[in-house]
Image (cartoon, rainbow, N blue to C red; front, side, top):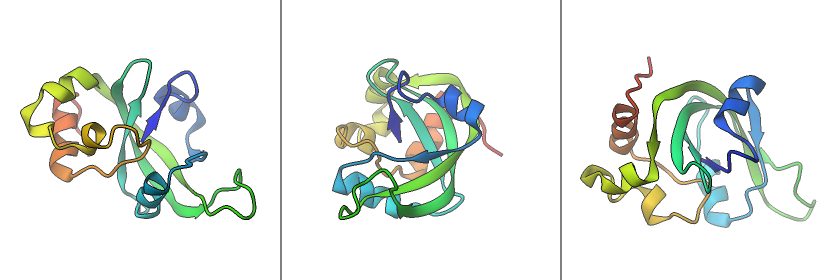
Length: 134
């Protein structure tokens, strides 16, 4: 999941304890959120400024209607909570330069704010970030 750190950062998620991930207005990104299950882990990526994976969050509540959308629109939200910050943020340049991550949707579907992540990619990003999740 991507967010501009000035709009909503991983540090803010930690301070808040949880948040509703709203405002997604792309059908593919919406469908990716609808596929999330309670307990799924999420890489929290700072876009535009920072351009790095900053932390790991967890889906606390599965997709439900986005209360910020107009009544006739079909958008969804999920609730997430922080798990842990990465000990070392993993930059976009690092991800691009890692041969095992060349097919990561963060790179191949870069315009989407919510993309799926394969377990092997997730684990590699955690390793690059010197972070272990229990």
